[in-house]
Image (cartoon, rainbow over all chains, first blue to last red; front, side, top):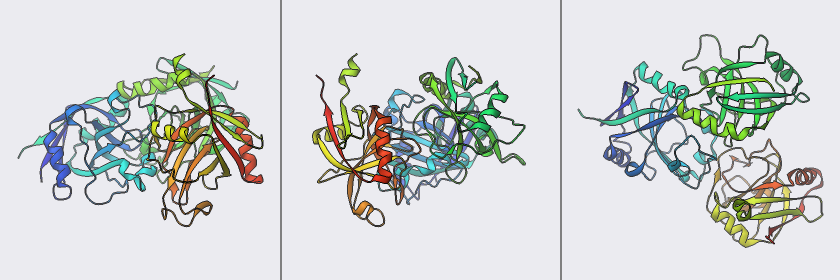
Length: 169
Length: 149
Length: 160
């Protein structure tokens, strides 16, 4: 399986793409790497940091893979797209480009993952689930403690630069 | 005293305590003031900012709801895992005082909705908090103080 | 004051005179829903008190009123929020309010409310918010718990 390297605040972690499960999503992600941006910590989904995809890196992919009703495990890396039809109130923590539509890597680094309010989002669990695409496309296979601490620190210290690149064998 | 001041970074807001419907909690809170510390933005509840407290006595369930709304001032026990990166050795719930500053917020526990004490309502300065809290999410969390108005 | 003049408003009133309110349409957030609803006005509907959601009254739209999801509220509404919701046939168990399919308007008149039905929380289109008269209207809504349904008139507030 292809691998990606996540570089954050001087630390790094390795993830494996689920090429055998969601090949089209993995191909689309591989094509846009490397991606970098200022990562923000989640406020609905617990131990998650997000990397928003901007400009020519934006991905608008259809759902792929087995049905997931919002169930997420620590270590999951999810392609997430939110339709402009969704409301999120005043998204003042995000840049202007993401006030409505959102395209991102949702990086679940610890426990609970997707716990909190995200677990009770009606759109994740019902017939309107096409308003959001959440494709599990990779899993961390090596997450040093320093990387996990760096992810946690984002919630207290603010945005940190995250680079996601191909890890060539 | 039923009016208190919340300072978040450079922003001030004011809240009215609901002494009629949450008498024990508001009495406890007034005795604990001023409270100061580094604000924490919720990772699990949406647009919520809180301070972790170290109470000398338990706070009873009062004026509870699972339907928290914008402007609510809350006191409740939050699962420790939402505060700390790992479960502490023996502490499972942490007492916090928090406010809800925008929509799409509701307090969750490990297993679902969490009923919380509603101790007051922010009456002035909410718009300042609406901007300051997200700014802190981006730039780093700062000091929060709750004290007499 | 350009924003004030550009905000479209509707009046919701119980025809027995028990309560009324003015609401602002959220044209920026839900343009398609607002436009569709504006085109239907005036509307005379039967309002009933919701049995799953808390402090909410709802009124079913007759005929073809299937609108796409827009400004979909994720969680707890604020008191005063007004939404549109479409429930397709066979989506939930049974026929809530005797209707196997429904398009409905909901008015959240107080807190401690979340739009839901037999399967739990509903993803509703938030398209308006009461800007004045909510407390008066809320009293009339609360009466409905014991007194039953009421006739509701929704009409445009035309600028003069």
